[in-house]
Length: 307
Length: 211
Image 1 (cartoon, one colour):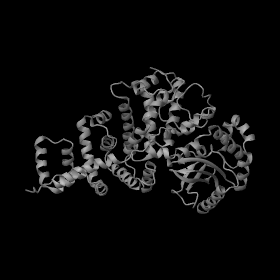
Image 2: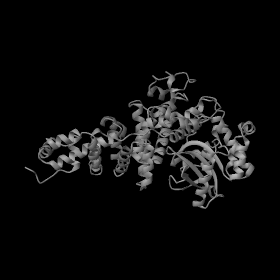
Image 3: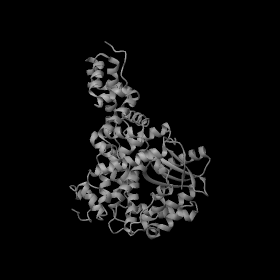
Image 4: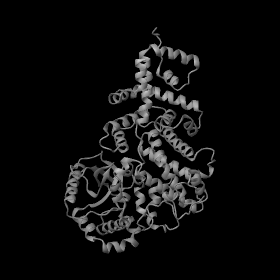
């Protein structure tokens, strides 16, 4: 007998989950024995479980892990400073702006991002990958680490960019970097290639950095100066910088805006140039183009950001 | 129980339990909590990302959750596992977010981006497609059903564990899962056919068809 009443998915799902009372369950089972369509539905339900179970669970991206470390460091700070309870999540950008450089960072604390000039510290940045359990993360580990390695150099680079900036008066927010960094900056400014940051800056009217950082959309919504600032500046004449110049021209042609900073890195794991142009200088609004460095094609929709 | 604070690396104390770490944290060990974070962040991330379906929202939720766990560590009673407690905080942070934001329409390219971030291996296009479809489909479910399915079907927790995390009876978890699966079945059924083309065929399905 093919009962004219079929059972809906919900009943079948409840059957599979053992939620039906004995009588109902018995009736449904008898129906299933003779009804192909309902059997199909039950198979669909089983497939849902299989599909869900088979969907890979990603590892936490580095940017998120860093953010959490930062947030907890601030939390630790407030706990030690007399346990000032923060009523709501504070503005991390604001709070963390000066912290990694200014704090004495000696007495063991929750992981700081780049507190002191110990060589092992920056390796923390690669922690997501170093945990090693997740293959995709590991695949990019060397690249990440290349970016993460020189914390000292990165701190110095802020200063270099910062001074270059004050010298040329190009970047409004560069002042931050300059005010924070001097203690580290002075030696590096004299020892590390000063021409690198200055000459190209003046010649090109934009700063090129090479962070090799893997950007995510989320990070690109934060203040870009924090991301683009602490990266080693890229050397002057090379095929790479020709590429950059080509893309900068392409981007500014499309946007009709002045490009002022370019960073070589990755976007969601893909090689990319992060191109920042002034949208409105006074309010530090920038347009951010993410392009691939070979064809200068946009990898995502240009977006507005803050510098 | 407290290991020397000058050796914070995980390799130095492989055998310390989560509960011991939490106690150390409460007693002022500045490294203990970050060790807990390091141990569990990938799982917490997965739960949040699947529950919220949006990487930015998930990042906010996980951050809120860890900060809140950091503060509330003293209120951990030890009647549940630390992981359960952490999961509860993460899931609650996600559900809070969902409630506050209601449903935000998600652009296709955002879904693609999210999925790409999740499975960056270039040769796994099929997996990526599946992952995207699953994310999109999950968003159609009410939050409580979504959370239950993420924990039970995706993360593989037992109904009992999920019930502890969600602080509802097991029967409630089961019925949320059942209702959620019933809604997903029509949306995801074509994936079943596709995967069956590659595999032999789902045993249950074959059984039901042939028997």
